[in-house]
Amino acid sequence: MKVSITVNETSYERDVEPRTLLSDFIRDEIGLTGTNIGCDTSQCGACTVHVNGSAVKSCTVLAAQADGSEVTTIEGLARNGELHPMQLAFTEKHGLQCGFCTPGMIMTAVKLVESNPEMTEYEIRHGLEGNLCRCTGYHNIVKAVQEGAEKLEAHSPFELTRSEHQISLRDAERKAWQRGSS
Ligand code: FES
Ligand code: FES
Image 1 (cartoon, helix red, strand yellow):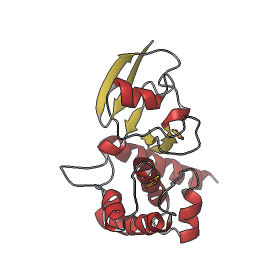
Image 2 (cartoon, rainbow, N blue to C red):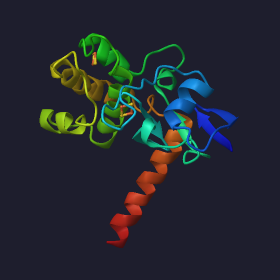
Image 3 (cartoon, helix red, strand yellow):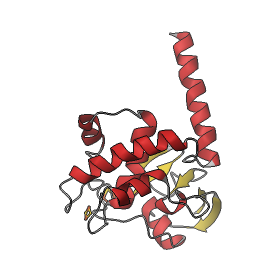
């Protein structure tokens, strides 16, 4: 079956089997191998990407379900040769060791701090529950997310791709509408 998925602002049309996972589409069909596959059973979070502005484990979604979607992968976070503030924070705070979990961890962290830039340590740990790391003990990851939140506040709206910016505007409008109608 034919699917058309926009990844990092480039549209890709491919003929895929109906059972093809979005994670396999990203890695095998278009060759973006920054998205890792650790379990294939929705437990580790290494495959996390952004789909239409939300953090999603890409091994839990069929490529067919993502047809017409806007996807951002770890490769799409940097802008004009500059690392995304959350990527910088992970390097500065040593939020990784082997690095296998890191792309998924960063993609989840970006959405966490976008939803609440002032998360407590407990909220960050809770928000990262779906992302497993077998190396770091999480301490430096939490520090990196806190640092990333501060950097993002200073950088906004650097972190948003054009499509994510439109989605975030739509979210803001929807929330305003919900507040107005409640
Ligand atoms: Fe998707 Fe582990 S590979 S959650
Ligand atoms: Fe190795 Fe997280 S840094 S799994």
